[in-house]
Image (cartoon, rainbow, N blue to C red; front, side, top):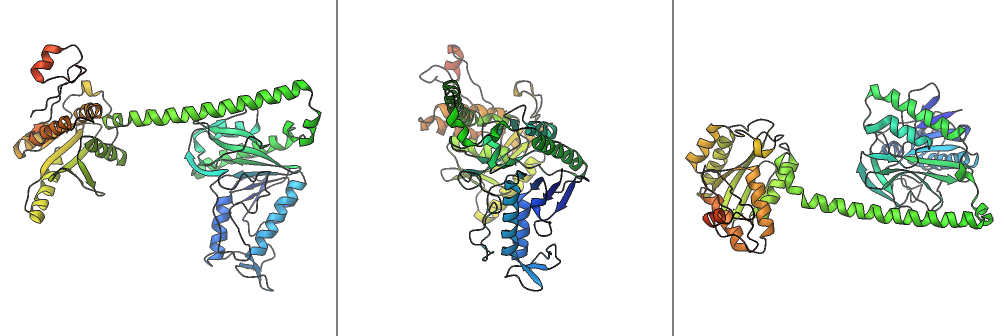
Length: 462
């Protein structure tokens, strides 16, 4: 068995590794591994004259037409397209890693060239938009356990990352061989004449030590694909000879596939709903990163603030009243130096605008511990400084409770105004007291309950 790899390093004595430029005739092999993204990068490099490569005969490849001392890029690409087509006609195999398609408009001698123009087109041309769309994820699940690709995906585990997904028509003869966790088709097999194209998600940034395992799994998969008989190899006209039982079975399969697609769509919608309704929970455990910063900003917006942020600073406004916010999330207690950073920002604001804004610290100490049992998530020195300078120190669990309450009272602006007033008047730790349903006496002492008799909120300095 002879294997050639184009643009994808496969360290093995059983594989000839080449680029799209210097490869010998592809149809002389039994199987071709090809990485279209690598091919795209080489095409763009040649077109921009930033990459010097030679054809197998030694001539330099250039953007123009072929001549005595150079080989035209358009002519080279057309030659490769024909070689891949001939490989399919000979019953060969193409294993291709899938990325979103891109155009290559700089190659004027090959009009309409895109990332997949060299690949023999299966019926329905699934490598064009919108049949092939951008996507991103790492959870890839085999759809057919006995298919040779399943072993490859299992061997590579979390080192596979899909970059695109297929939206195949019900009439397509493609065989779906892998899904994402959300049901998107991320690997498929196509018949092209007597040959086959197996489209797979690429490996994800393999280290040199991982390349050997990848190569071994890839070669084993190709050997099985070539050696094992394919039931899907039967010509389309065979269906004309279906028995009534076979026809009924095909109808049942089509119906089941349609139901599966609808179920997968409902799962996707439900996942989106869960992500939306639980998004504020992440402030309780997120590390100090962009996700934590974004969710805190969203929380202040729910409370009725206007939020403006730069890469380093966060400022909120209640009407014309500004407040500067510092954030911290840590595995242990947050740093007591937060107030120094906040104090410096407030002084700079005063020098520019001659007004001193409110200072707010949002702290998430011991983020991996249940908020109900956290002990001293911020040092006493930070509490003392906030009390001294009039800063509001808001534990994330308090902010979470406020946002939860505010979300339920979004059509009652006076409640949101009361929450903002409590924050503005707090010097030190903002404490939230939430009464459970039925605790009528305590609710009356803290404040009037809402119409459901469920919640009352107070805030005071700690």
